[in-house]
Amino acid sequence: MKKENNRKYIIIAIISLATFVLIWELLTDVLKLIPKTMIPSPIKIATTFFVKFYDPNPDGATMFQHLFSSLRIALTGYTLGIIIGVPLGISMAWFKRFEMFVRPVFDLLRPLPGISWIPLMIILFGIGVFSKAMVIFMTSFVANTINSYSGIKVTRSVHLWVGQTFGASNLKMLFKIAIPSALPMILTGLKVSLGVSWATLVAAELLASTRGLGFMIMQCRGIFRIDVIIVGMLVIGGMGAFLTYLITFLEKKVLKGGRW
Image (cartoon, rainbow, N blue to C red; front, side, top):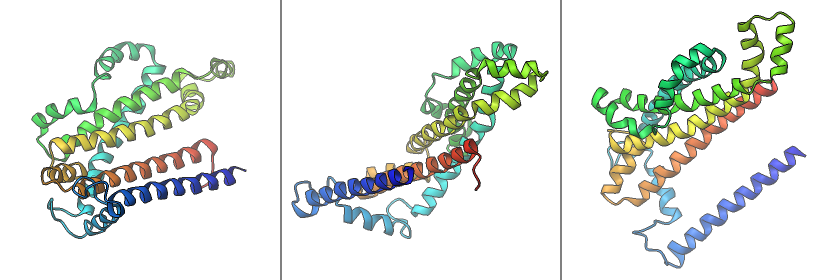
């Protein structure tokens, strides 16, 4: 039944996308109701997409170069956010004194949007890879900390009581009961932080960069190459969806104990 529902969903999704592209083509190339200077046709977008993989014009780099630059920055900051944010959230939720010490500083940083860190990081580290990776880190760090904290906090007290009854130490209950119970929330945090990190990366590249998908979009905006702008937007959306799918796949394997 589940496989059948998945198959139906895929078919409906394909029909939906095909209908959207068909209407787009009718409005641009066939009926010419929308000028090509405003919105290029799907055929023009597809042509630009393939050409951009070997042609560095008009922004000075190919699609592979832009994509590699964006992925390197995003995954560096995102990974640092996981490495620091997840243990911090778990520690804050489990150790009361540690939470009392750290929570005021975290609550001060939490409301700040990722893009608000861009000017400070540029001043401190310039416009290189590290400055943008640190902007991504701040965004990923907050999301992972919050979800890890929440996951530990919702651990059922009856499970902890059973652990205490059998003489488990505080650390043993943390690693054997609390963290396994919090895994769904922690993994959800990975997906949430990935989305906001990817969006923040584009904003950072729009403001200060020499290469990357955001940089490509910004450069082509100045010369009115709407086809390249739309291609960049589609690549950003597609890559974000692909990375989210990978985490969802990992989530299913971890939570269900499935085989790779």
